[in-house]
Image (tube, rainbow, N blue to C red):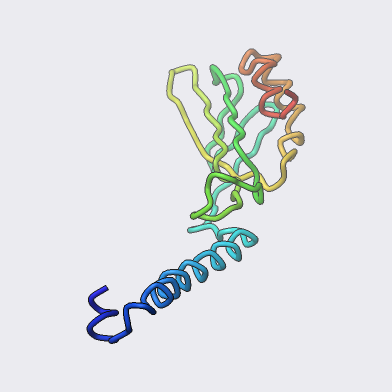
Length: 153
């Protein structure tokens, strides 16, 4: 207010008009920037490296091979897929990168291994349904966990 009254020397009757432009303009620019950002996915920071391969007799994480006969259990937590619209993440980007999915395995010696993986399409894990059924047969996974992983709910 002191800046407007004494430095800019704006008459008191015109202050509400000036003040509304001073406040309204940055708010509109910020809102327009926010609206434009909604339609563009945020780029991944860093790189996705490594590989995760599900096979009937083994699971490969990067270059480490874990044989099914050496495992106690397998847990797959599917949270999202690349490009999924996220309502609660407005300031960090409105689309998921699909990297918030987790694989946990526990070996017979109680050593636990955990890794994150990216899912590019909503139903991508259907490709490993045969392997998941094999894990059920071997007591490493429950049917409920498989159904949850494959979105059969």
